[in-house]
Length: 155
Image 1 (cartoon, one colour):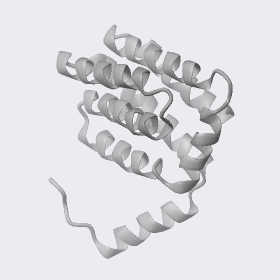
Image 2 (cartoon, rainbow, N blue to C red):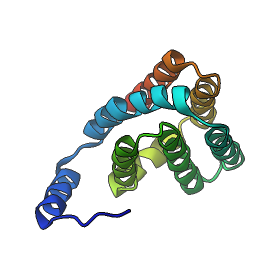
Image 3 (tube, rainbow, N blue to C red):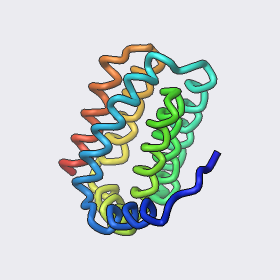
């Protein structure tokens, strides 16, 4: 389902990637992911819940491997986006997720990961997001994603 992109579109995307700061990325994530979590809590199927649960369980087993954790984190958030059942929001999340692979973001994440207690805090936040979505509590899902992203911004 890939649609051809115009050269102008590709140029605009490249400029955004070059100019965007990590804080702009976090602002964009808040704008998109909070709504995605709300929709996921309302629309997630059992298969969606299972996919999120599997990602979360794999994250718990990979705490000591930062690169694996970052990959699983992206997978977890993409599973939430998929569970929202909104193709446009999924595409936006895919774009944001790809920006998270940029070198500056990866370097920041590696430094934060080594803070005392951070991996446990990180897993707890993801578990809270998952539980809110699983329990179909859209208000709490929004709150938990906001709390998680505000914590990432603060760290």
